[in-house]
Image (tube, rainbow over the protein chains, first blue to last red):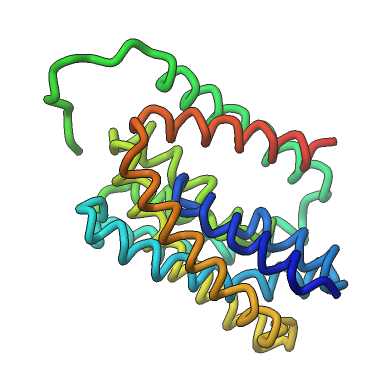
Length: 131
Length: 115
């Protein structure tokens, strides 16, 4: 048990979450496994408590900055329930290695799209198509 | 209510169930690449959606006794302080820099999962 290190990692995870819009589980889970000696499953489950806290406060801050579309967020959150059912079935039907490779491939695909956008010359006209 | 929003939510749920993440790694890129969100709106909307996804997950895991609530509540205060600092920092960053940081994070997580 290393509480000081856990608190430090949790702060960094929250900060990363604020900058890129994730819940911080990517850091909470390994920290809980390594520093608190939880099992992978316990760590993933416990991490979600921190993710809820980061999400609530982060969304509140972003709303005050004018960066929140609550209806879209609600739609995504509710449809995630469908996805959870699909995910649980997939976890039982497909080999773990295949799921990991799919996750990695999709992550790289997203990274390519975002990197291309980040490196593209910025347009001067502020008008952008909205959905 | 667009089909793309439904697809993003479903995909986020799949990833959350399979890999124990909140789904932000899926939601933010797809809001930007599919729905033409700017980076700050994508991250703000992602954080709000994650609350629901993580809450459903925590309740489900809690029912099976896998949530160590004391340790969960231990990480919450510093994480909350971090997200307040992180969102404030993000307002001072160019939006495209957020995409760049996210791309690096995705490559790193792909490497960790695949290797």
